[in-house]
Picture 1 (cartoon, rainbow, N blue to C red):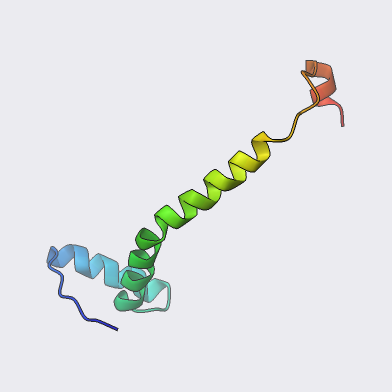
Picture 2: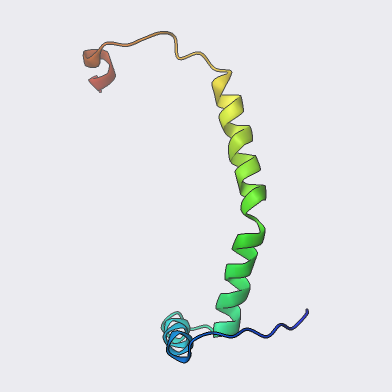
Amino acid sequence: MKNITLSADGRLIELAREEARARKTTLNALFRQWIEEIARRDERRGRVAEVLSRMAEFDSAGPFTRDELNER
């Protein structure tokens, strides 16, 4: 694992540490989680696009009336 150095406002860092304590974790762990989410955004977008594309292949069997849509 590589190390990096970040700079941020002291009050912001303290607020982040408080959040980490509330979650019973460390600021370092929260940062790793955040950076992983950012790194995987394109991957998730691709999966969503694939699912939406596959869903578009299905026909909804035509328009429904309001009453038909509200039937339970």
